[in-house]
Length: 142
Image 1 (cartoon, rainbow, N blue to C red):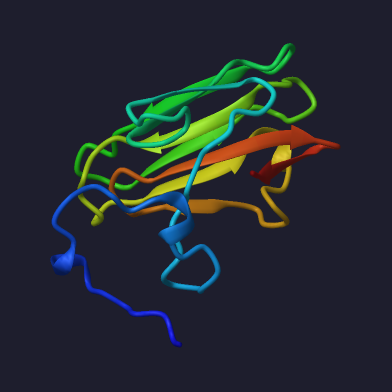
Image 2 (spheres, rainbow, N blue to C red):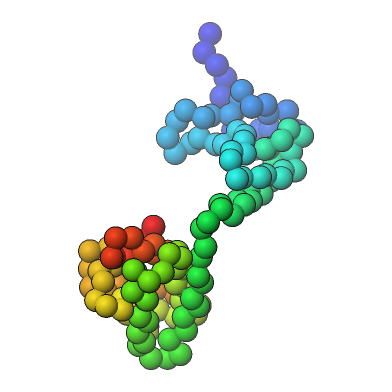
């Protein structure tokens, strides 16, 4: 006999179990449990660890540093120059800290180093961010 399918509005209590959840159909699957890996910790509100409302925290990896650069165009197009990639090891996080998308931020690199194969990149969308890693005399988007 075929399995009976019910809709969400037909469920009256919290008796759905992990085996009842679809994890195999693209576009319909749910996460059934989150498990922490290396340098990751989790806290959760469910009866089992990694279920319910899950908060994921990553601890810093040894030797990796990041530089956060908040950018506000202030009603005009602006430029930001990354340092020469041969002089730094930090991952750079560039963040447009305003909602408007009219004014752009043009990013280039000191010494003319390429940024992911291009001479510049544009940040236009409000509240968008980009991470860049220096490597082998160039910057790479990560």
